[in-house]
Length: 606
Image 1 (spheres, one colour):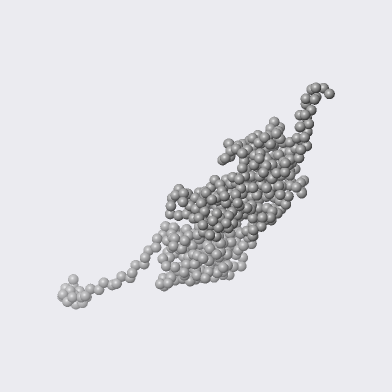
Image 2 (cartoon, rainbow, N blue to C red):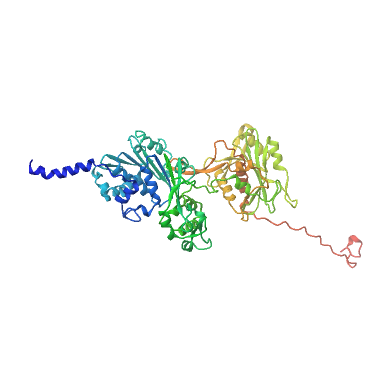
């Protein structure tokens, strides 16, 4: 054998053994602890990965190699390592189980950025990945490795989601995905279609910060076969609990910076004080389990946690963030979503019938509250009946429902809007203005409002938001010889926001929205029959009011919208209550004998 061939034989043999040698039996967390290196540009703590820094990620990552688990759902806040958890799974696939993979981000631009700045640097920094990474054959949106490829896709690009079979599917920040991918279906459904050729050994990982209850990640969490939360032991009593925001104790009177320094956590079992220094030990001793105590994984396994668990977040940080954001709905929504990892369900957006029934005013039905300035009404016209509501208004747009109900004819509408309503001291009030919906039976509504123009106006809900809440238009009915009929276009969404905002005010605050004593449940359920949701209109995402269920009755909600519009139209915002003047006593002057008028037969006609 030639000398040259002999010198290469050991290298060839070593290379062959390297190819044929089976991969180590490692879990994802074990592999990451050995081989994952964090980039200094994108990581808060660059260098060798250590799962002990974020122990809660161990159970999530290791579920990826659990044969019982097909899909992992991680419902998370921001900045707890969720994306790095996903990256570790991808690195494990490349090094340990090479098979086609697809990683989906909310849009194609983010996919390119992440590939260039996080995924490719991850492959270059780890020797275990670098030796398998073919950088010269790779593109930003398609990375090539020994025995596999990884497609990096945007949820808004149907081309990047189709035509390639994949075994491993990773979806990041799914609540930011568009509802449709171009003219195609839901991007998550398109991505799942690619796994059909691996029916028995596919793995799907989806993670996101939640937005609304009907958002993708919350719906996935609700549909999980098992829902796990991270339980940690109290350093004082040893009882296991999840971290809850309500257990953080702080003085609301302090400034945010002082709250950061003084807030602490209170154990819900022993009331022991838990400091930030206790958290690392608690996290290392924690475990993923159900509220009933089970740690079993199933086919669809969900994991949920909030930002209190993060090693980079102090108890005071959470309390301070809440104090600074609670008065601004947009900032409060960010706190609920990004810190507590809960769907946004503030009562300013979603109403509850119990909240309505709790807003009793102390007045019986039909009694006008003290300091009322005016009354308004709203009528919702249906095929065979009319729903109505009458509301009393006082300063600051404080309002009380004094009567609501159903009548069957137009004369009955006229009667209920024209009778007098009295306060406790006997003062009479009449409905100053009633808004009548013209959406169902426009002709009859116009006739009614023309005949009763001194107190009734016809309205119609606007299809799109209006810049000024409502808009007066004029219509003609030439066939009946009527011209210049007033019709108000009303922004119903604005007044539904108005009602929901007023419902959350405290009883002693000006501007509250109240109902009379023993208000009926049907009224409360109809007033709260809608919720605010996000919808995609073209490329813009907007919030709109929609019925909670497909056939929910919302007639009383419409009536209250119309009554609120009527009060706004009359200028209730700027009115002030004037105390009634006491009846002045007649001035009587005692007649004197020296002064007699000529009418009394005196000596002088003066």
